[in-house]
Length: 254
Image 1 (cartoon, helix red, strand yellow):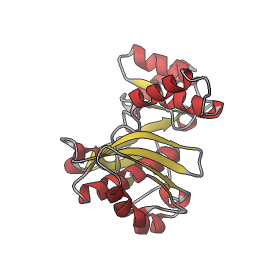
Image 2 (spheres, rainbow, N blue to C red; image 1 turned 90 degrees about the vertical axis):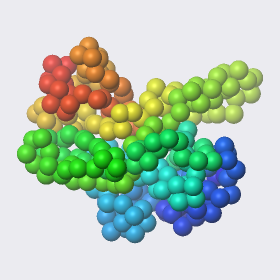
Image 3 (cartoon, rainbow, N blue to C red; image 1 turned 30 degrees about the vertical axis):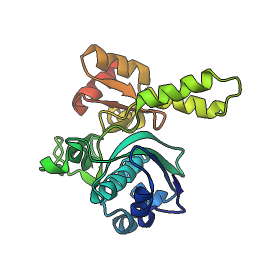
């Protein structure tokens, strides 16, 4: 089912989920960028039932809030979800999820809160079931909170690779070259770890121009950390390294 809402899709979600068979796919789009990215906090509370604060990685924030909304609606019906695809060009936020008969074991741990510190640029997150103090950042400043939102994978890399293989094996491709580039980019980023950072925000901490993204990621991997470019937005990345380590390696990568 394709639910392409003008604005937020909140009112239609329960009916849409009930109309999709178990194992079927719900493809959902929203154009409510101001609410989903934290630029209209009151509307976000009304439409998402969530607190949303603006931050550099706003596209990913919007997609995770949208997936969190879908998950809560599905759980209310006793169902689970499996995200297959999530992307945005900044105006529309699109997700494709497989609707499951039951939530996966531990799926509830994937709903949580995200903290962002405007002072030092760090992102942190935590499951609602394990929530504790996220407001106080390690730099001593107060962080802003967004959520509840989805802290699981944003896409199923194997499914995206299968789509690319199908297109490569046909004599009459149905996808445009731009769509194929998007699939290739997303298939390199499953969305984990769930906090993304922006190299421009890192440059603000370093007091100069941003480090080359690939050099930064390579240095983090050499130190044993997970590090990959974000498939959601150019110039963004994700890593399980502490933010202080990211800043340190960013300075060396320049």
